[in-house]
Length: 418
Image (tube, rainbow, N blue to C red; front, side, top):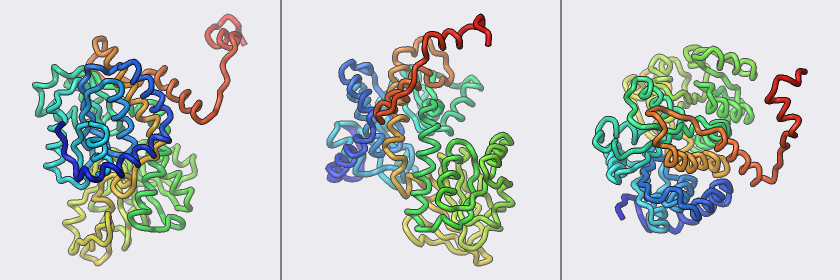
């Protein structure tokens, strides 16, 4: 078995942590039980480029239980949990290529190693596998029956490819499932982002002016948690509908240029490039803290900040201080990468339970239906989404109503009138 991890001696600790996460992933546990019996992924080679965490490990174990021949690599250089990577190799027999803090060359060598497995299905968290296949590994595309995508950023990329007619195989947008973006993005990103910021800085949110750029599901979650901890939250948006929603939710809304001089903490969650730029850094107050919880570190224009700084130093783990020429300091957290995974542990297992249930069932759906799918991006089927919600409620001991026959008839006909 091929692999590249930091230290196999960490495997015991990693296994303990994987098992702890599994206790809070009842939906995935039920899927794993069925997969082990039915083997729906038997004969399928699968490459998964995801954050290598305890929750992802439970997904990988579920896919293997379903018969998949699986290779895992990291989707972010700072999100890997080295003990988990070691356990996947040493305790679960899953080829894994991931080392926390790996440089760019190593990162892409790991992606290439995953593609060397010649997968039939790709499982992405940011469309890296799909991008490399379409640019450098085109000869492998005939092997691919489809893929799944976990993130908003990745779905945006893939839809752009499909619109231009260059996407060569169908992809399931796991990110767009209601049980994913409602919960993973809002409750998961909201809590874990604030957790990462506090672990990195030990700052007090209460009384601080927190600027959140982007009011999608991730932005809503971060804003909600920051306000809940006493932060004075400002929202920056380009979409008038989302901006209006933020106003109606009780937040101040203004352009970044107006927020830059007054913010204490800046969080980008847009999926776009150069959200916080040189002109914003120029007017930030001394001690401003800047971080990102979108997918890639390009949301922060760090090269621009470097050019305008006379001194750069790491002042504590995950915190780099940039002293500008006017002697005011700006702090960048986690190299501008996902702060919830760079400085913390990412989303709680009970949130990722639903996201990874979508991934597992999405892979099963792709295998069953690939021959009739076009080369475009598809959402998770509504019946799968609702079944995941039903299983989650059942695991929480919560029951819901069912429609009577009379109610069903009323909703599906026009003859009954009002």
